[in-house]
Amino acid sequence: MTGASGVGKGTIRHAAIPDLGEIHYSISATTRLRREGEVDGVDYHFLDRSAFRALLERDALLEHAEYVGDYYGTPAAPVDAALSAGHDVLLEIELEGARQVREKRPEAVMLFIAPPSVAELERRLRGRGTDGEAKIQRRLERARKELRAVREFDYLIVNDSLDAAVTAFKAVVRAERLRASRLGDEAEAALLRAT
Ligand code: 5GP
Image 1: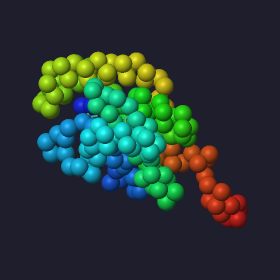
Image 2: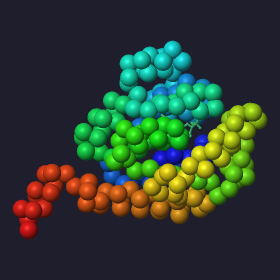
Image 3: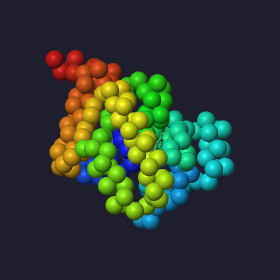
Image 4: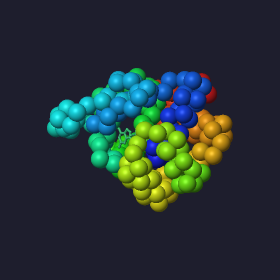
């Protein structure tokens, strides 16, 4: 799931996941400072730069990227463990990281969440009140750049109405779970036995 900060990815996730069964949310590592209300180990693993570098050196990240002056990355081990347990995994990551995941895991589903307009995104970022003017401008610039890559994605949801966005998100997950090509060997054998 990719989309500018402030576009509502977290809100959509929180509203949709209770209806979707087993989905493992991947907690990213970041060097960004913790915002008020964020909890270490829940929203992110907040690390200093040397700890982040150590993860990179150990090749412990599935993907990583720099975003507006900070580093963000997906710890690989929890993703692998959840997938092996048969769970779906949700990553909330920016464009560069999403491209790395697509390279490494071509079966990944790429979903883009767009704001109704960049002006609306600006209003939301300001309303959040967590970033200074320079950071807001850099985040908006990055958001425009990501929007230009929207056709690289499998699905696009414009977060105009939250209810509609949540419904669309759930529809994508449910449809993807029904893809015949995702049927495992055991499930296929069971299906054949039953017919
Ligand atoms: P924020 O600072 O607003 O929490 O996140 C900034 C951007 O970094 C957002 O687009 C968010 O989706 C992205 N991001 C969060 N975690 C990761 C990650 O693990 N990897 C990558 N590549 N981007 C991430």
